[in-house]
Picture: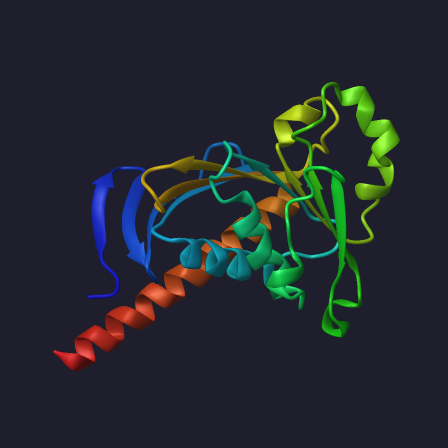
Length: 208
């Protein structure tokens, strides 16, 4: 079976959706925030999830990535960029240059995708020399790895993704949307996954 729904507690539902095990939180008491937990079982799934997320992102959106080394931040970014028409092979972690800029395809208005890596930032004040205001100007999509290094300099509205190791390739991804627009993106992704689950259940039922 491709999709199952198993009741857990009064406020959550555990699902296996399109290859991902997902934890869906019901509406929270704070309308400005929303969260979603997913488990990716491979690099391929992580990239694919990035593609699905990228399909709902727009210029001006900011994605913050929190994860230890080797957790899959850049793989997720490859998928997001691919959804905007960027060759996955062009996407690499800008650890030494701090910012890579990719050009989206014509369908996305050739907008820039700012891929930021703050691993080597020692103090938030260094962000000024990085051209922080330009990165967050809103003319393109911004993805920030090691976002914790810019604490206090991050936009109020953002989609934060926390990635944790669960095994050699298995990863837990926890999405936290802060603000109306990021919440809209997260709800769209949630609905997308649920539609896939429903289609898979229908296919399973038709095959029985």
